[in-house]
Image (tube, rainbow, N blue to C red):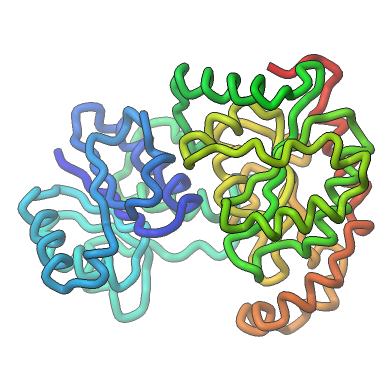
Length: 359
């Protein structure tokens, strides 16, 4: 049996959809399970034994109709028995149409039902603490009637060599070994998903005041100016605990560094999802226009917790569409003062940072 899973999107989505591959491997141990993703997301799939082949959707496939057709024909020639489309956008619709797969599964969308043999209704509300991002993906397995215990947890696989490199980096920057280490998801993927920088500095001050910790910033080199803005806005006592220049050279390095940290706090995004896959406690600050119920995954009020402005000021969200909220996101962010949830940060840290030494 040959199975193709499609998820042409960003890191968090690719990692979340990898649970489809993980469960397929348990159900069909002898099957060939391939995964079609953007080339930039492959580091979160490194070492995953549940994926036989990673098929890359590259920039050339988007820019050239000829290259796109070549990819679609490559997939058709592979003669997949089952195709699971977790992306379900124009790019994947064309691939599905040409695939020749016997069974084609995706979400139910008006005007596209003819493409698939199985159209799964888009679940509106979560039924568990897995979150909609996870539950919706697991629903794509329903038509297969798999009789196995379902594992909802995305996984990352870090080699011993990668861990040792991260440990050496900690030693090079002289992180205090008697302190726990907190990663800050400093910036979102765009401004509308980034907690105001001056507010983030206050959150980091709260962390530094609450516990004697090492603090790392997660940011890309191109975001260094924003990172410096946050650093400069922190108290001097907080700055003394921040290891500003400790960065991984690539995504694989970040995963290994995160694996040596004890928890993560900050903006929703890929860094948070990777931390959760490493089973690290997380405290997420959601953008006002993002639906918390989708990406507030595995929330238990203990290890994983999140906050949204709607939790504190629901009157600001009454009768507003997602489009309206997105347009007003920066204004709404200003209403999301850190004082609203300082006690929640304090409680989260108390629960998840013990007095023992970090690894």
